[in-house]
Amino acid sequence: MTRVALDSNLLVYAELEPESGKGRRAAEVIARFAPNGVIPAQVLGEFLGVVQRKAPDALPEAIRQADLYRATFLTPATSGEIVAEAAELALARHLQLWDAVICVAASRSGAGVLLSEDLQDGGMVGGLRVVNPFNPDNAARLSALGDDASQ
Image 1 (cartoon, rainbow, N blue to C red):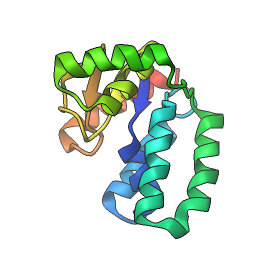
Image 2: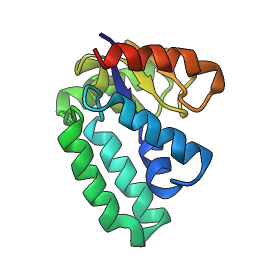
Image 3: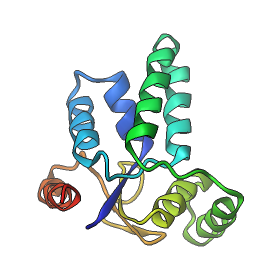
Image 4: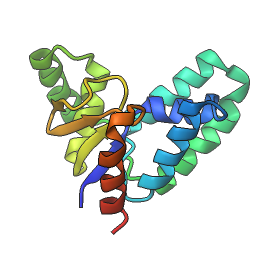
């Protein structure tokens, strides 16, 4: 089974733009990969930070939603070891440090795929295949991953 990790952009779209195409797609993807998916603690922090900045009135609900994600998904913490490994990955691959933290935490938790629109679609980062869930060309790949994750 391929474990799938989610990036913060999915959580943000689902929370802040639930009626948009991306918001609906994000909600579908989140539901599809629960409870066998991974949402690193860094992702939850980024999600809450974006909500606080863009829609402060929505923060209490976002906090409740983050608690639900923690209860539903594997949520690896950001340890000193993860930060050190991520720093090396960021240096080697010219990534933002916090993106590298997400990749390392997800990979160490057994994820083989990271769903994100922020990194190169189809690329490999820290042992993870990056798949943009909003790219229509990835529909079959996501469907296969979802079928695999539900077993």
